[in-house]
Length: 270
Image 1 (tube, rainbow, N blue to C red):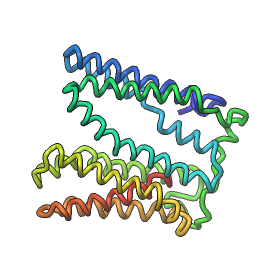
Image 2: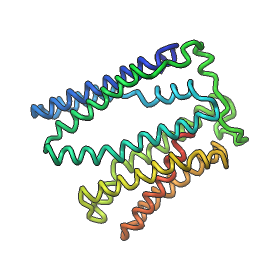
Image 3: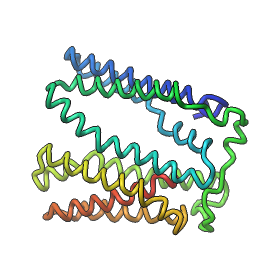
């Protein structure tokens, strides 16, 4: 984390991260094509994951470039871009594997996209904040006029501790949904691969719509802190309702949609 905070290092770290992931995916594609042992593929996967630090650096880049009022909106658009990938990616990957019957080709195309992203950052993105000292760029900005205090304290340390605690708890729930949501839908309601794909794409569309059209309006109306609280309440209600929806696929889908409504309201606030 310290390296990107040095002046002029945001862009190089982004390029290295995206490029490293792309090269790792290319190696995984080659391993699949050659029927390499599982441990080889998992080792390459781990090495690729070690390069996957682009997301926090991209957020830090936006924090350097944006004003206090612009930052939440820009972060919401970043979330929307990531969600859009979940809409397009499975469809494109499904068509590709249907046409080629080769998982290696799908992973190879993913590697090409990651390397393309690294090239785009290297050519078109300009470094920001390089003329500021580290202390100047680390000075927190007041992003909201909310008077709500951090539950773990009013100091910077308390604020960071609050955000870390919130993120850890929210990510625990998100990891459970990401890992087992599709499995749960299959086991309870007999969804096949196509049905699961339709469900996940539809839910991604809900999240994309919230990020692009609703988040900024809600933030301006009720403030950043209350938007985060609203998002977390919807996430908790949605996940709890998913667990209770045992007999109705419609109820299950509505509960999952409630979760997808809350996540893009919460994510940009932190």
